[in-house]
Image (cartoon, rainbow, N blue to C red):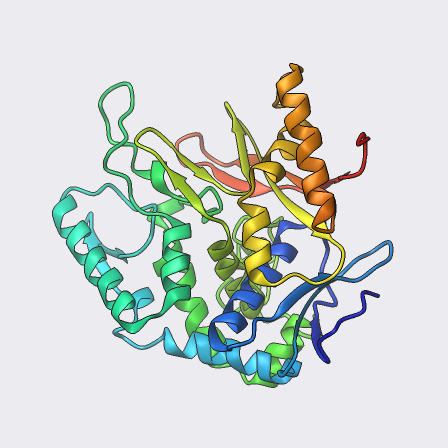
Length: 350
């Protein structure tokens, strides 16, 4: 097991590094704890054939970290909290801050109301909320298709995998009810959920085909606490917007083919180190080689070799790549990360 310099560690006992959900939960838990403390937590992986994710803090035992998660959700269930904000679209209330929504007919109203929320969050200095909303994306009004139709989803994070059936959207249909569910748990129950002792999927009604994994794993019940933190893990992946496209860190696309990729590392990382590596050109270059997207010219080969050395110097020992598959209708397909494939970083380096 990885030796931690922090005396307190919360180990995700049921974690599976070949499920994207595991990585997202650890990232989200660390981000929530980081926002509530002056000293950042650390993330690490246990050693052995079945590594498990760990989040540790020098001053906080697992029970107190669980209490922070409960308090974080409780703050966002108030009627004036941004996850509870709604806007009427096609005669139905939708989550104002969702990046993928039903067709928007009145863009000025949507933009004005979203800006009001962002201005309020800036004044309250709630930087995790701001980072999350930035990373989640926004409805896009500046991208057009071949028939001059607005491509509203073009500025959303590729990690926004909420199924779109019947107008479903991620804030109103997922984040808001999860906040209610997690706020109602005790710290002890939250810690048990992280350790895999219990699995209460109230938002997904414990259905065998529950979508509470939010596209980060195959359908099936996922505890509300786990789903909540997995969503907040999106905050660690930056978006790079341009007038014609939006690139999500940790994501590759080639036509209809798509992959997510994340690192496995030795030692302890702060959330800041994690964000740096996830957004790095070096990690992307190695992911492109692993998925066969880069060319064979010498410049790309040099960039990939240099990227491997850069990652090895920071303790990265492997890359996990998750192919994305589409399910359901062609008009509103459900995108879902499949089981990951491990690529050792040291392979092929000189």
